[in-house]
Length: 226
Image (cartoon, rainbow, N blue to C red; front, side):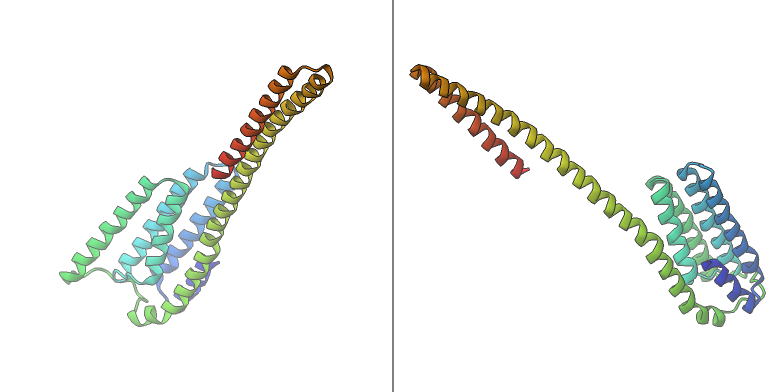
């Protein structure tokens, strides 16, 4: 939907190159969505989608007087971030090198005043007028897409932390239950020793009870420290 709005703007300015390239990007993203729904690996789809959304805007920028305005910068950043999220860091760095190579080429073209074909319908004035609109739309996209991604990450981390805490509490409960059962057993033995008048057995029971109570307290202290 974001790209359709850009297509409408370029139709008003009669920018023929963008009127061809923007539908290609829309088609590319639609194909990516269909591939995901058919169960194709997200890594493969991310590789294809991020590369095409890097290269096609580069082609558009080159034919539009090597324009490096916000609408191109933001989509390149988005492409590299998507590559990093869905593929890996190494591929994202390769995409970054491709972009830097293009920027170096543009710098050389501009510094040496090399004349390059400029698409009919391109004008610097129209680009300046469109910048507030395009930047606003891209920022909304970033907030929605990347914001949701990082929110999901935070939610998953919170769930993982809660699960670890649950497992930890379960281990504490098992350990303390074991210690208290032992204490209960030695307590019963102590009662028997009192009845039978066996002071040595009674002393031994008290020693074991003290030992296991100390062990339970130490375990609780260690758990709180972790």
